Image 1 (cartoon, one colour):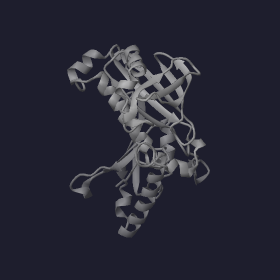
Image 2 (cartoon, helix red, strand yellow):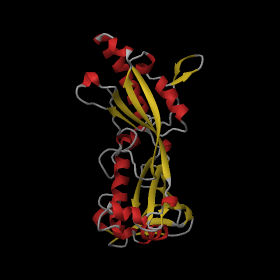
Image 3 (cartoon, helix red, strand yellow):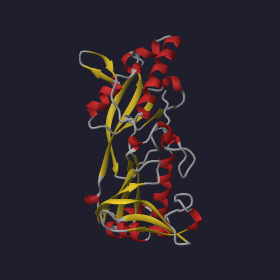
Image 4 (cartoon, rainbow, N blue to C red):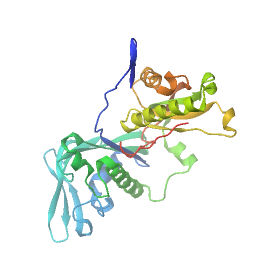
Length: 302
């Protein structure tokens, strides 16, 4: 919901079928990362379960010009297309159609240098508007479809396998990570962090009134998270609870703090005086935070 200057909250339009986005960081320069992804995909890609032929697959090929094919080859010579290259911009990115969905969608792989030996690899799987509600719920390589977050979970597993190939010894220790990264080259992602607090006057509400407002607040928060307007939300608890001020934490990735403030001011718990809130800016290295698919998120609050 979104508050207007002259009246009550009105619905905020959200992207009904947002892209699936996942990313990972690997200890490798961007050129080597890109080349390894493309040239060795038949080695590291988890063909079981993420392919048509599974254990029959002997190679995966990415031809390297727009209009060329991406396909798997089986032991008997059968070739099965994954899609067609739409854009080819090494070492930054490539885009392809994805024909492994009920109707073709689109996948973009991008590679960003975070330092001389650190790269963020990101996948964005989009075009879900082309699928019907029934198709969105169909099983993919994993049980469940887009609607249950299976594509998000699948891309997470694929990127984890890719990262493991480039860093077989496991993640670097704190000292090694700092030494290998150029601080001036690190790209940061910006989030808005909300601290939800018990309002002093709200503590005087009756138990019945508090429970009613809390349920309205919780329904609103679940809506924000489910529609992608809020990244995550959850309670913050300590003991004894009655002496606690901060009671919830929310994470947003909106265009501005003002947008987050408007969303929070429309929260029934805030509007009715049960809660107050503070908004802060939080920045973290790009690719260090990932979230599950749109229907796979869960939220709760205090």
